[in-house]
Amino acid sequence: MVGRTPFAGVAWQALHYLEAFRRLGCDVYYVEDTGDWPYDRDQDTVTDDCAYTTGFIARLMKWCGFEDRWAYRGPERRVYGLSESRLARIFESADGLVNLCGATVPGDEHLRVPVRIYLETDPVLPQIEVAQGRQFTIDLLRAHTHHFTFGENLGAPDCQVPLGPFRYFPTRQPVVLDWWKPLGGNGSGAPGMAGRFTTIASWRQSGKDIAWNGETYTWSKHLEFLKLIDLPRLTPDAIELALAAADNEAIELLTSKAWKVVDALALSKDIRPYRRYIRASRGEFTVAKDQNIRLCSGWFSDRSACYLAAGRPVITQETGFSKVLPTGQGLFAFRRLDDVLSAMDTIRSDYVRQSRAAREIASEYFAAEKVAGTLLEQAGL
Image 1 (tube, one colour):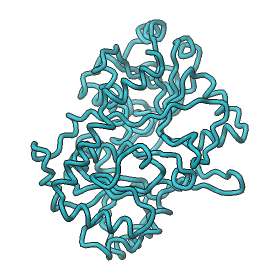
Image 2 (cartoon, helix red, strand yellow):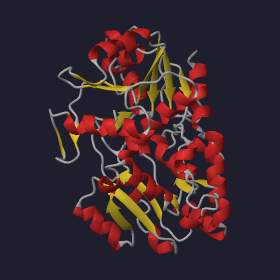
Image 3 (cartoon, one colour):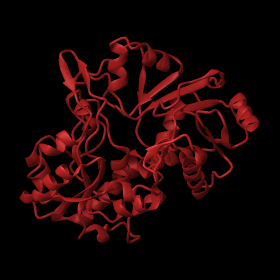
C-alpha cells in the first residue's frame, strides 16, 4: 500500500521485502492493487488523480533498481508502470504472492497463484474480527494459503489474542543492513552520542478500537504517551517526537512538559530524510498500542528495527517481544516509567557499547535474507 499511503515508513517496509527476496534469487515485482483511491501528499487529500501516487512509486522503484518491475492499478482499473498484458502474464506465471499488510482483497488473478501469503504487520484486530464472525475478514484470510504475523507471541499461554481456525507463522520486519549502516562507518555510534532520543509516530488515530470479552482495546498511541508525560523532566536526555495527526492543543501540552516536537509529515515525504533522522538520533524512545500491550501479542515495530540496524538503541513498550528478542543491551523493553529511566541510564553509561549491541541485534534477528528466507521456506517456496 505504498501508493495508497505515500509516506517513508510504509515505503521502507515494502522496499526491504523487495530487496530481501531479490537477494535470495527470486524474480520480484511490486504490484499495488488495493482498490482504494490514493492520497496526494501535496494536496493533503484523497483524490481520483493517480499522478502523485504513481510518481512516488516510480521514484522509489528507480532508487532500488525496480524501475521496470512495478505496477499500480487504480480504482478505475487503469494499470500504471507495467503494461496490463505484462502484468497479466506475471500473475499467470507467479509461484507466490505476498499480500503485505493484507492490503489487497484477492481477486481471480491473485487466486490463481498457487502460494498466497497473508503477511500481517498489525495483529490483534483481524483475529478479534474473525472471533466476532466478521465475514469480510474471514473470507480475506481464507483466500490465502499461508498466514504470517508480526505478533510473534500469538498462541502462547500469556497471549489473549484469539486465533480461530487459522495457523499463523511468526515473522518480523526484514531489514537490509547495508541500507542502514551506522553513521561514522565503524559502527561506533559516535554521531548519535549527543543527539536526542526520537521516534516517528501518529499522535492520535481513531477507528480501530475494538471490544472483546467485555474490554475495549485501543489503537491510538497518544494514550500511552500521556501515561509518561513527565518523562523529559526526569532525565537529562532530550526526547523528541516526530508526530503526525497532532493538534495544537497536544503540541502545547507536550512542549509544556519539555518534550521536543517536530512535524513527521515533513520528514516522511521521502525515504532519505526519514532515514537521516533515524541515523542522526541518539536512540529511539517509543510506545506501543494498547491492543498489543494488554493482549501480549509479541508485536515489534518495523521502524524500531531500522533504529537497531542504524546502531541506535531502542527503548520500547513491552508487548511480549522480549520472549523472542534479547533485551537489556541495545534493546530495552519497559512496562513502567522507572524502566525507561533505568534504560536511559544504561545507554548513557556506555553509549558506544549500546550502539554496537543494537546493530548486533539487527544483524542476528532482522537481517533481510534471514527473515525473508525463513518466510519462503515455511511457505514452501
